[in-house]
Length: 373
Image 1 (cartoon, rainbow, N blue to C red):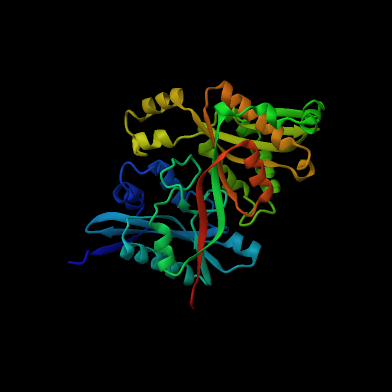
Image 2: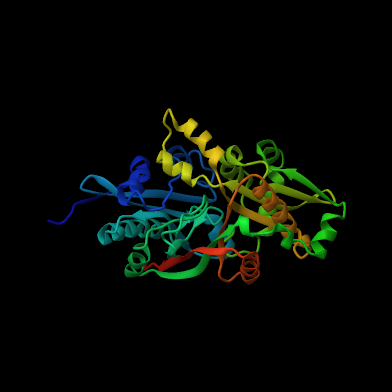
């Protein structure tokens, strides 16, 4: 007897439940908190849904259980910036069920096609400054916060539906016990550090809130030439950064001013995935005590983003910031540092990661498909 499928649109409750129904408990997927996912996907609360973009979600049910999900959206700002007619899919999680996967992909394709798109690409959850990509290797390795984890059957499911991979990426992990931060400091970095022109702001909650516009400016300025990047408006940045300010460890994130002007930023946060997995990403009476226990035991952190103003890009400031952050990590008892996706086309960043001695965690790629009218 063939299974019966049902597709629901904007069913956030079922959408959240999908990975818990579709994936075994010992797979390393970590879900956002249910409240955070609702907030992110709510068009009344997330300023992305407006002039910048439009979107919806679909949940696939099999015999009454939610076993697949996908978001579909159009990022109008990206299409204007790059001259595209592209729609996007994201949050693509599904059991190893070809029919359910095809049902979800066809729903996303139909939704973006109706809005004038000529191709569809993903995963984007929802933009390039959030989690992106479909994993193609490293499935057994635990991801960090701000990293995508997708199951091993997804690439084949996408390819059988007419999608092809593009824009390959990798994530990395650095074993801190084996790394000497002094190796980051050469004569150029020492001159900059000792110039007297640098001033540091710790990006704990007060510092982040006070300097949020400087952080946003550095994000937009330093990533301006990166593929897929779209400058982040103030309302979107504040929306995305708001929850971040509650979990930042003030010892780990810094903003550097050079001669009084914003020059560089490194945002490094504790990895929340072990906590999320232990709570199944739900708020219960005992969740706050579980979080406090996680804070005492945490030993992994992840660099969410790092950027240097173009005027100082070749002056060694990136190494100076990383030296400062790695020293703080080691002194604070962290043992591993995750590095979110680096494009395989980004030779300088890949050489820098190799120089650090970081090991690859995952290979990822974006997938896209042309849409017939």
